[in-house]
Length: 184
Image (cartoon, rainbow, N blue to C red; front, side):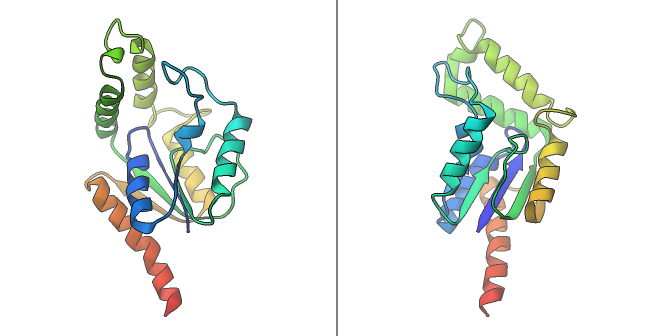
């Protein structure tokens, strides 16, 4: 079972993947883990595209089944077969509320005016807010959605309206149903 859950920053991809992975006993690989090198403050140095690809593919080789969370559409990967793609189509307002809360929990006063992460945080939030409207190169809604459609055998789009637990349970039911039918 190989699943890719993608969507805009703050859409709930990683949280949903962790819940789903826990329910199914499948490892979860968060693409963000391979995007930036560990620095303090964080997010100052990106991994090269080659490093990202190498690190992600090495992690995927560790298990037959896995769930990837996040956007990998721009990475230029040659991926193994992905059985199921999920696009989390969360509204911009909800995404930005989640991101604001997450950033505050992670970094506290460091993102306030005068804090060592203030400028980076404001730039990140502006970049995240443009996800739906951005076109061309770089991560955007159209690119992430199209990547899932092209790369995954099955595709589903999930909008707002459910908790992350309910979303993960719904995805689990969709994944398990075909397996149960094959066993009968």
